[in-house]
Image 1 (cartoon, rainbow, N blue to C red):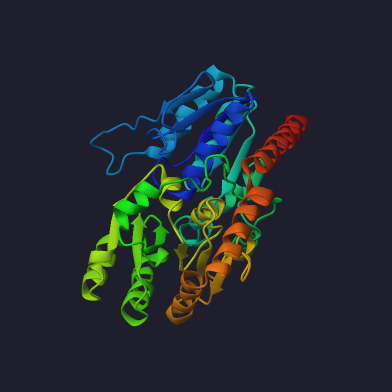
Image 2: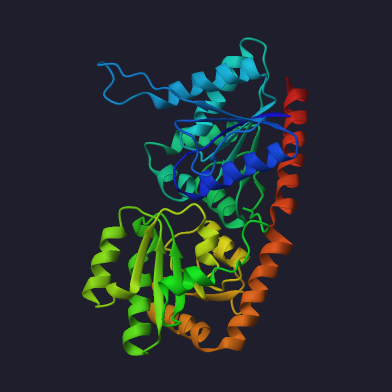
Length: 382
């Protein structure tokens, strides 16, 4: 098939999933066209059957804000016509689904049929999409899509609860390439960061307030200051709460044992030296960063919210705690850092969970089958 994919190019779960899906589809012989404002973070280069098309936004004095949604629509129409796309798959409802639906309608006026699949990822439903300024268009775009998927059953339920959805939503979870994400021998890297044999806690996020990065620092400070554990904390990513987390580390007197590493593409190398992965999020529709850690054999300590329980099995792959329960998060991390037998058991379970349930080879065929179903259904209506 010839498939168009639109996603946000920035450092975030929806863009990562969309990019990795496109690369996997290309490996399976499909022709994939990425349409975005800039080249996606995980798309380091194009290959023979992967193409990138940049959306150019018109700057004009009349416009207070550049009309990206319309520019995206026009680019979708152009690529669909000249690349003869069989299907357009958009990730994140705002504004991609609206642009795709409008592009489909524009093409239909010329006798060209291009089905639209929309994948819902999280805050497009649980936060931004519920704003009254977006909700009517989000509802219409979802219902007007030829196919809709959600990355967790939790997100599917949330969508039906908060929007008047009349179409079916297929749950296809996020996935991981366990060949890429596995525990590697990075002893030289660990020795450089932990010269005295300290254990390692890791947090990976875009440092938005909902990720609760400061709670990670709080937990770490308690383990070091109160329990006297020899641990280092690695914080990967960047965003508005990074400076807040840095200040908190200084205030608690643990800044010297914390490393802010910024955005890192080969995050699997960092996860390979981790002993505990922390995810105390206030909202999480799946938890892709946790899955990456599990694939690298790192037990997860997380909030018991959203779609995380569909990924992490409490007491098996890691520990789930009530939201904002810093005492519970600390106790869970302490168990994993002080009980080597427990850690080994959970680390092995986490890796097995990633391989047997969420490996890319198990999930991508579900997307391919869904594409065929949507395409046949759309063509039968044409």
